[in-house]
Length: 73
View 1 (cartoon, rainbow, N blue to C red):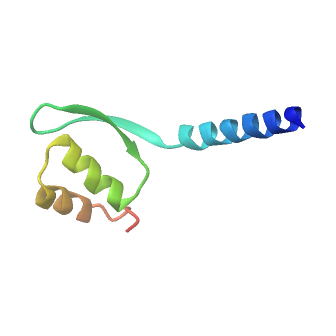
View 2: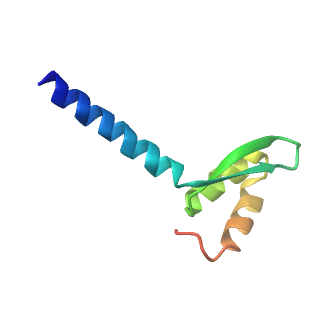
């Protein structure tokens, strides 16, 4: 029983690690010089969040994310 649980746990962690490894990352610097490593997962919400984390205003981040046709809303 303990071995089965350990195998299930290990395989779950491996699958999560593989899924996260497939998301592309990029390093960007915002207008105030703040540098972050961002996940490029193709989501509109992530684009807005990361734009604000970099230091852009909500309006600027919204304009930028709206200009990217490949984002999933």
